[in-house]
Image (tube, rainbow, N blue to C red; front, top):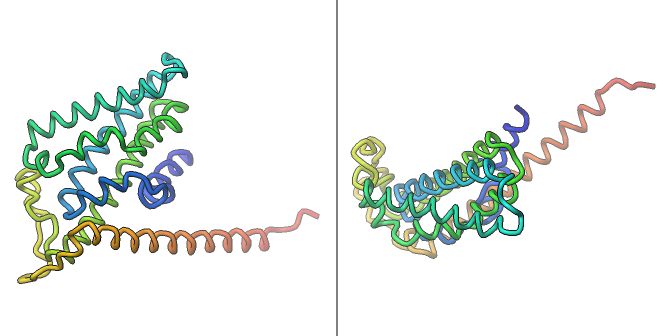
Length: 229
């Protein structure tokens, strides 16, 4: 269980795709003008990460190291193509909004990186847990960043979610600031860089505090430990 706790903690926070590794920043900044767009791309990426990790873990003993990277890229591209077709068929409005950034999931360094560094060396279950943790970690940052930009930029949260994701998502639509005229800068790309920079800074400061607290707790425990002499 400790292994899975470490995997989940790394994916969600410690080694988060965006906050810890600073990967996938191009789609992050491009689609997070709203929380709805971030959620859509996050869920699509999550599905690809889980399936790619699972397939890699199941086939790692049958694929030669000499061709492993091309095979993994081909496998990821196939999964992304299937995801793109599913979104186009079942969630067409969201597919139109995300546009090119769905096929560009193939070039997401985080997916290939986890496949190569983790899934290719692990059993299927840890690989799936890693894909879930990394995918959920990426998704929550997309949604959080998109939500902050949407609230400050237009005063809404998950606007048009029922149009892009289906009628079931109408319940999560909110008008946070009524009669708000909006701040266009936050929705535009410069606003994405500014909000992301603040988020990275807050993550680093919180990480430093947590590390210092862990070191202090470890020192206190060692001081209180009974002597063996």
